Length: 484
Ligand SMILES: [Zn+2]
Picture 1 (tube, rainbow, N blue to C red):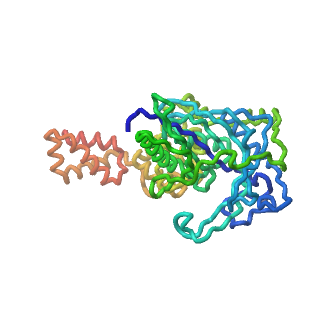
Picture 2: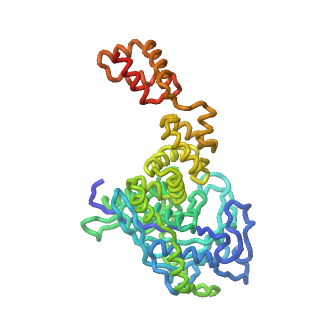
Picture 3: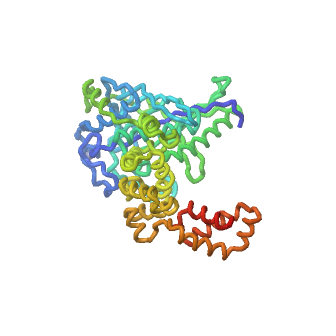
């Protein structure tokens, strides 16, 4: 469609904080426990049970605010957000509306080589609702019964609300990935989206570039539990808004759900306003007033963040931007790279192996760097075998795969499988002569000036030696023999 429209995207991200206990009680937050085994009178909302704020959760929320350049407010309060739903035993969620913990921050994203600042309006603390488990397949309205698991009820969340600063789905993706990466770096959440530890909501509207008074009312898409789904949902929604403008229609403000199977969104309800929730101050909790000393201490103890680390990888290791970006998005991955460089001081070579070979193996095996059996020392050991000519770069790839699967050293794999490179000229000459004798056609082609034939003949020699012949020697000897 034409380019006369502009898309406006804002994102709300809910993140479960990685504390051991819930926000207002001592119940465990461990994921995957038997339903309703991690509950107490507070998170089940028994009459008279009183909440007490988890200091670790507050610390994590403050760190998140600091890492995203927010102002940590000297005074903020909890409020009750009232609504009725079976996953909410209190009949209200304890959240923050008028005086949130932190405000006015930003993160920097990179899209197509350009850096852009995305504003963070606010980050506030709240407790999670319980989890509804619907029996049977399909949609909620097709289900026969629903059960409630209160283990999740009361788990600490932060909600990170961006300014509507994104103009494309690419920017939205970069924003979500950047926020995720920062939170993982400061170790306040694992942000495992499959476990629901990070949930995305996107607000979309579209306006005419030349006339901002022509625009669609925003729709909010809820429950996006992967960045990929969020992209698909928003792409669909953008088209829906553009089409409406094109047809001269206005859209009403509403909340929509993404249907993964049909790849569309559908209306869930009219968008609610804050007053629909009858917010009022939570009388059972004191205001949050973190001391300046504590906030400063947390600020000074923040670790190196992804952006800074990426810059250092470029400056210190001479890596291209592309490598530095891929290596630093995941903190553990970046740590692994640095350990490997400590053991083998050729950063670009290490980066190539990690980004090409290791990433492919990990993705095929659906593994993370945590499960990687290749220690940095083993990694360096293999590189040294290549450097001293024991194995060829080609053989090294199969050795590397074996190391990945078994956790053995390159040396022991090479010994066990007899993969030592053949550098004995006489041995190679024998094979070359045999290949020349067996392939009169390609040999004739070569003598007639066919350049492709040499590649074929080298391939035959490598095949006959099971890839173990030194390729440079094979090339040299083959050329000599063919020209003699
Ligand atoms: Zn509890």
